[in-house]
Amino acid sequence: MIPPNYSDICKPVNDLFGKDYPFGAVKLEVKTTTANGVSFTVNGAQDIKSGAIISELKTKYADKVNGLTYTESWNTANLVTGQVEIANKFAKGLKVEMFGSTALNSTKRALRSKIAYQQENIFARANIDALNPAVTADVTVSRDGALVGAEFAYDLNSGAVTKTNSTLGYAGPDYLITLQGNNSLNLFQLAFYQRVTKSVEAGARAVYDYKNPEGGVSAELASKYILDKDAYVKAKVDNAGRLGLSFTQLVRPGVKLSLAGLFDTARLQENTHKLGAALTFEA
Image (cartoon, rainbow, N blue to C red; front, side, top):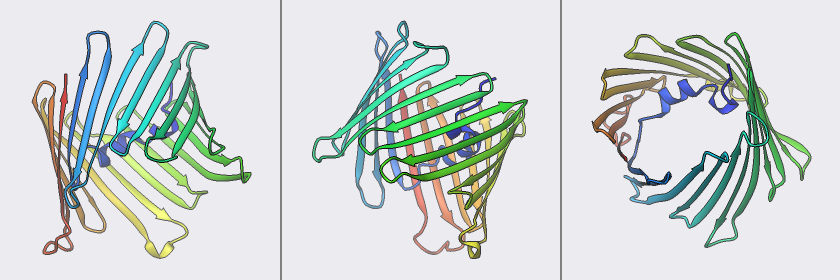
């Protein structure tokens, strides 16, 4: 079995805590696909407090015969990006990516290349930044459910390692346990996820900052309950008393609505709460 890439080792936990919670914003996303396979995605979000609007237009075309994928985007910050992916062309499990971006109203530029290789029990990636010379690499290996991953970043100009992260975990048929050591083993996170039944998911995570022991351990609990095939609710709470609630409904095929709120239960009378909504159309 091919393990997840390093960024996705904790994906079930991160999705349970992070997805379907559009706090403080109203979001709209429209996805369409043409007859020849070109997909268009338009998304926008308005911050409820400031009224600021950000949006993006993205197009994507996959040439499955040659293993090529082309992606372009343009957002309201006048940032234009382009990406080319070549998968399984040079070797099975090998994907090469080239990414570039330029800001039309400034000198901001980016040019990066990425190589990813996946086979049974291993997933490795390397990312090279050409304009700000740096290398970021990560690897995940697995065996019989056990997961071990590591990530580091190296700045070629200073000759210094700028990031080191590591993860240990175990993935069962319906659960996942992970222990992460980030920021050179100064920030630790213990996370747990379980699909309790077909309609119930639960998760927990705790974070401890070694450099700030006075801050203690921050902890969170989260759950998801599937009401029926078209709707589900989610809830999460942390030890600071912040309660997050969300409701997601498939209004009709291709139309999904999410409503969410974040409430500070320690300051219910104050204006600290956040509401939000997200509407997605997909054709």
